[in-house]
Image (tube, rainbow, N blue to C red; front, side, top):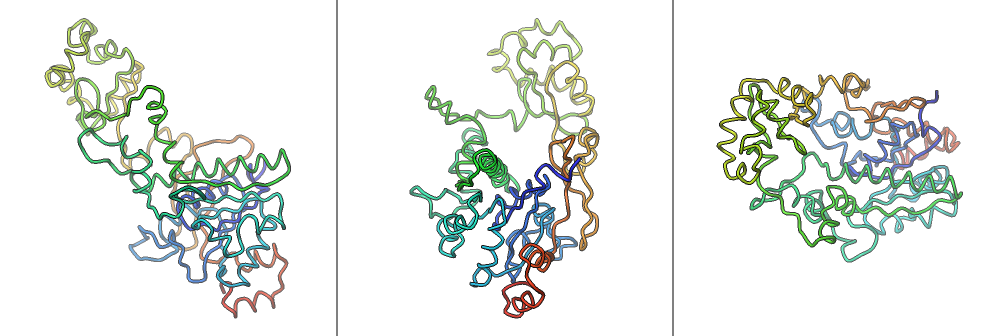
Length: 403
């Protein structure tokens, strides 16, 4: 058993956004050596996002930083200086993958683009993450997760007809892009392993989101139908489907294909399957309120979420219910698979966070602590670049690297 499936890889993380950070977090979980480059001012946007421990805006204690930078090494150096850029070039020459998310052309202007780093490392895989990619009419447009979600069609698919689109929560669009970025980078690394050469990987967050949510564009190109969600299911229950109130909250009801016969059994009377309300779907839709009042409400309101879901699942119906964060931490399925892990951090102490949604028998995934700002600067320069104590001290005095 080894330390991790990707323990032989070195990742140079020059990104400062969520997509890049989540991408490299995956590499860290799989055992790769992830070196995160941060500025001397400690201005990484992720470090400055809350919530913070005890509501104190300490860049070491923000939840996004503790989660997204888990298991990485922090090296503080100023890439705006010539000496700082030279250090990045030296690190890139020894790296397997570089990840950056600057605006198109920015890294090349600094002398840190793929074509400039490749001569010293022809096996380098270089991943650029931008809102719209490196070419096209929108390449230089600024964007946020909300604007990309709207433009990609994702929010359209999350709205109720006649109402405004619903934004996804907690920057999930960028997390989607980060997962796609990890897959794309792994593709580049696999190509290198087979062919023996690196390559440039151009990832557009816009396209990652547009291709993620569903097959709506394909559906339209196939049959000319533009998906426009109908009212309800995800908002409230009606006609035997959707979110219904029960004894201790709400339960999500979904009988499934051919599930009305099973629903009749669940409700306690298999003969209901022959009732017009169960056999005539248009009729039931026209009398949905009556169906709910007569059949659904009496059963659901006298039972808890767990009782309802357990009984429905036993019949093969995919019922469920929404869990709050505190409930998620005690969810039996997640506990059985040891999904949550306790990580010891020098500043915040022990913190519980999600692990990886995969179990590997020979190369177990390990979630490490997020680094304090610049904690690995001296060690990386000394051990990886063979710099002397005097050279490092000189760079510290010049303000090129952190103390």
